[in-house]
Length: 326
Image (cartoon, rainbow, N blue to C red; front, side, top):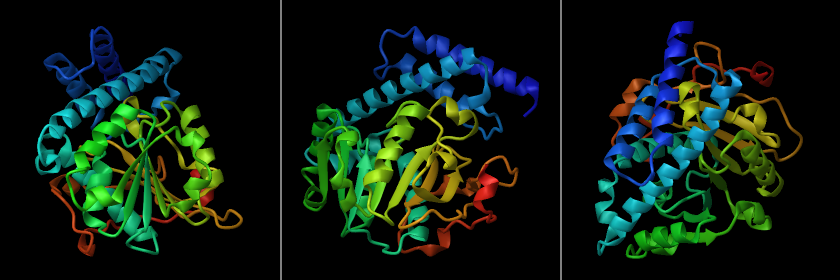
């Protein structure tokens, strides 16, 4: 990306921010939907831009924009969770959520990554921190991991009430999905019970907050357990906080994946050290700008996933030692 292209991107993002910041409400509406769609489409194309090194003014706009995106996302999920909850069997209608297919693709990606790095392909207990009113990741994964129990943590009691209502009518999921209303920073020894912990993209709205949470997880998660984080890369960093492998003190970073299609979030998988830290193997993209696995655009064709199908497993491009992360 040349200087002019980068400037045009920043200008467009700032213009959209100005329009979003004047909205009276971020609840789903024609204006809200239009502006956030414009923002996502602007930031979606793969870009080498490093949003963490932009001017102070743009950094302030980025921080505010991430917060606005988080608020709008929460309101959107609450709206559709309430709507789904009005049906006798909510999960039979879950595809009315406009981004359901994206969650299927993200679920496919995360399952594939997890399956490559975990000894037990059917973990006993998974925690999802920041599950929200529409816990689609837990629902999608629980539909395939038939023996796994899912513990969903959210600080908002209303979000958990809406989420619980979605699965309460399902005879299977209602027995295997649990909801805890608490700040994860107040959870200590309980984290030791999980084989895998997912950390949602908007738990910790900036790098400092997220680093504090990661340090807490590093202290209390079981040795050898897996941490799955959602981050962002390139211009997508205007939408979500960015976490780098170097931020994961206490964990062995296994791989970093940067999708190139409409799946916005990057995915980092790490393992809590069992003993002393060792050099980390990860993958690096063809540009060498960040440890990454760049997914092919054919990922956009995936409609669902079969956990027993190994043909869709992602091939690693290259292996480099930890020194190359610095």
